[in-house]
Length: 184
Image (cartoon, rainbow, N blue to C red; front, side, top):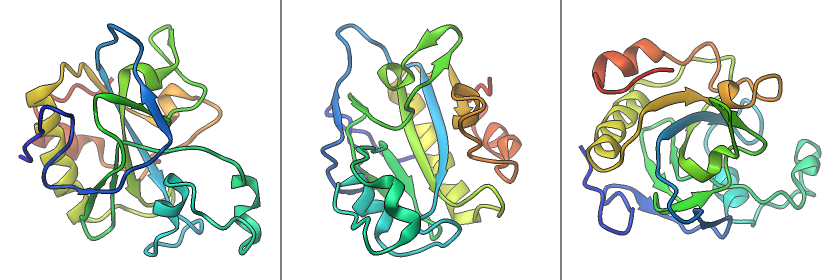
């Protein structure tokens, strides 16, 4: 497990602050963890473009496939790189802008009550063992501090709009390693 401090930061994570966050609504409790995948450029791993996107430093003019990202303000609480590096962009106590237009069990605006975890990857390739090891440790850490009641993929909270984490994500592996981790 990775200790989580009183300010919502995981001590094991490299901290890179994203401006794309704000306060959660008053009285809102964390209850959901959302797993995503991301790669920039698409289907290419490594490099700092994901970090640049989450910190509003991505040059959207140098690649044609980035033009649609111009002006986009997004973030996530965590990114787990292919080699297992854990990066935290937003305190768990704050609202990261990861879910977009979303709903879960009749509740809109999943950013209000969720933690976003990005895995460096795509819908068409398996994730790395190192990523699962870090995700499992992170899940256990988050459960020790926050009243999470479900883990879902982005595709479940934004059906028809999103497909991640994709068919290659091993939900059973996560659930077997984190028995308290309810898969919705």
